[in-house]
Amino acid sequence: MPDTARRGLLIILSSPSGAGKSTLAKRLMSWDPTLRFSVSATTRDPRTGETDGVEYFFKTRAEFEAMVVQGDMLEHAEVFGNFYGTPKGPVEAAMGEGRDTLFDVDWQGGQQIRNSTLGKDVVSIFILPPSIAALEDRLRSRAQDSDDVIRSRMEKSLAEISHWSEYDYVLVNDDLDRAEEMLRTILTAERNRRDRQVGLSEFVRKLNREFDAR
Image (cartoon, rainbow, N blue to C red; front, side, top):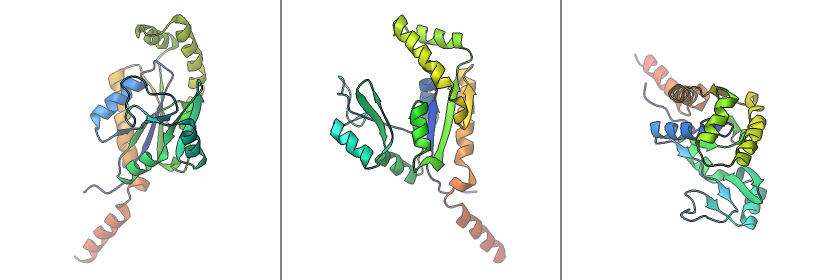
C-alpha cells in the first residue's frame, strides 16, 4: 500500500538526569533524520558560540511574556530567574508537513504539552534507570558535577520518577541498544495509527471505487 499523508507527532521524552534520555534522543534522530528536535525559547543571555534559533530562540523578558499571554508557548517555566519554553509556531509547521518533533522536557513541561491544543498528537515516553545505584554511577561517571550538584540531581530524580504513571510508555534503560529498539518500535506504531493518517479514508474510498469498476 502506498504511504498516506499523516499529521506529525509530538514525541515527549522525559527521565531523571542520568537515565540516558539525551543519548537515546540523539540515537533516535540519527535513525530518522526527518525528526525535528524542539528548540526552546529563553530569556537568558546567549553564551559564547550559541546562535539564535539553533541552541535557543533568545527573547527579552517582555517578548517571552507576550508570547505566553498570546498563547504562543506550548509550555514554559521559570528556572533560576530565567524563562524557558517551547514556541508553538515551529511545532505546528512541522506537524503540517507530517514531520515529528522530539521534546527533551521534564514532567512539568510534558504535562503542559499534553494539556495544550496539540495534545491529541502527543506520544509521551518516560525513561527509567535500572536502579538508583546505576543512576548515581552514571552521574558520577560524567565527572562534570560536584558532590553537592549530584546530591541535588538525585533528590530531583525522586520527584521526576514519581510521575512515571502519567506517560503513555515507560522504558527501563538497562541496555541502550534494546531501549533504542523499543523507541523505534513505539514511533513506528504511533505513526501508523488509523486516526493519524490524514489521507486514509480517501485511499479506502479509492479502493472501493476500483472494486465497483471491476
